[in-house]
Image 1 (cartoon, rainbow, N blue to C red):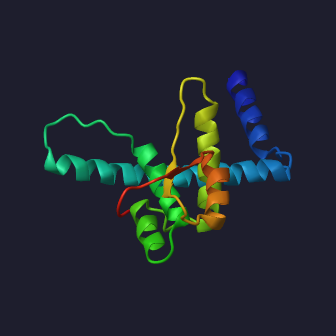
Image 2 (image 1 turned 180 degrees about the vertical axis):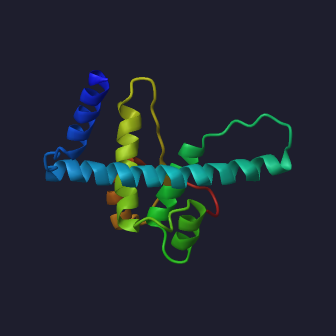
Amino acid sequence: MKHIMFGLALLLAGSFAESPPLELSQVRVKETSHFMHRLAESFNDFAFDLYRSVIKDIPRKNVFMSPLTTSILISMLHMGSGEPTKLILARCLHLMQLKDTRVHATIKKLLEHINSMNSTSMAARIFIRKGEKAGLYLHHYLQIFMSTLMVVLYKGEF
């Protein structure tokens, strides 16, 4: 009985103890983690939408796809597009509930995390026609998606 009472007393004392205040960097990490979790949920919703769409036409067949890669590629398009395309792509990726300004910065952190693992690596690239102006989009694209731009010479129409 004494052991039970002592255990309850310790439990109660621990529950009333004050935790030390969080430093600003810890708060930012928690906010980023929360936002990354919400971004992952959005990408998961997109992945299931994509999967359902693909298997609709080929029931009972094996399907191999990379929804994360597809999400990243559509995010690249989202970053460089204007209205109304940007809105359509945001709906497609389930990004409507997220603050647009943080989406691409969080994707960058996600890519850094994935690429930091020894067993995985991701690559993506945007191809543009020679003479096409990429402007500010190119600068942000190179920073966020850790990729390079490939200039392609096309024969005929684009």
